Length: 419
Ligand SMILES: *[C@@H]1O[C@H](CO)[C@@H](O)[C@H](O)[C@H]1NC(C)=O
Image (spheres, rainbow, N blue to C red):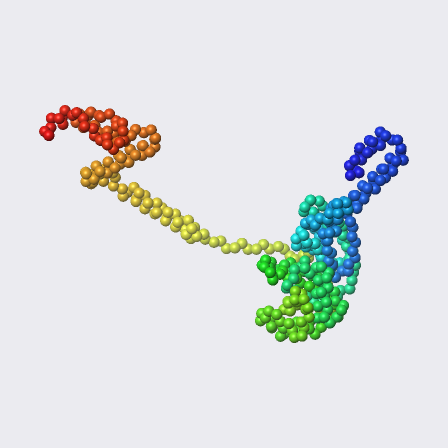
């Protein structure tokens, strides 16, 4: 606000210039406010995390909400609850670091950054929050420092079927799950190593019905060797039962889950003993970069020549001959077997032919009338004329059925006829 009015302020200051000290002070104030409004908008959070342990960072919508309308909260006492979406990326990069993932189910839910760092170092993550009501944006900076930590030698991965990743990431739920697994492992020194959405590992999107969940993989690690219960996973009997497709196979006395939603699927439990892993194969030795001489180059023999004539006959000539035969046949049917109109007329009975021509004539007349509204009325509607005298009667003036079509006329010929 102060910055946009800087030019006007300078003008006012130069015109009045009454008290130079006061002007100077207002400049300092102006710069302070500018600096606060520019740098204060991007809060910076620093975290230090160990390599090889699971890391979660919850993007609280409330925190970002405070950035959007701080004044309305202070002065109007009004607190909005706006839908928000987040966009996270590594600073100066288009995407997040490889090990870090982001999830947010719905604009009214908090978002989560989660993952397991694999190497020590420092990552700066930019988090942009977009307010879906006002379309304001704000930015937070998350500085993640990863420090080296000893690998946990014994690790196990469990599948929790009745969960979704967002429901597992809050630390309270993670603690519940960890508590169950600690009792299963019979140790307190248990660390979560990785949590993944089953969809990221080839799981299926569930039906949108109650009781269908995406599923979550939880990997934990410990310094302590696996407990009796965990080792039952490795037995031949367990493998056989799982292959037989039994749904819930809890090895006897090993059911430690208190909350049904946190129960693990025994058949998808995997143990990793990192102490037994073979050492990595030695790196390949580098050569001089020049190939050894191996004699002269001998080109391959060209393949034997092939006769394509039979193929040509089959693919080109045979269809061509069939087409020619068909053309000749069609030509004979169309032109060779027609008898002609005169021949047919000569064969036809004269009365039938006359009848036929009358129908044709009438049809033509109707066609002509149909093509033109103001066509002359058909001959059949004309008043009768005397065929002998050729005298025409005047057209009828009325459609009335009482008026006869044939008027009684004075006809010298009919008058002479005997009554
Ligand atoms: C955690 O799980 C994800 C997904 O399966 C995998 O890509 C990543 O390498 C795992 N991280 C560790 C440290 O095991």
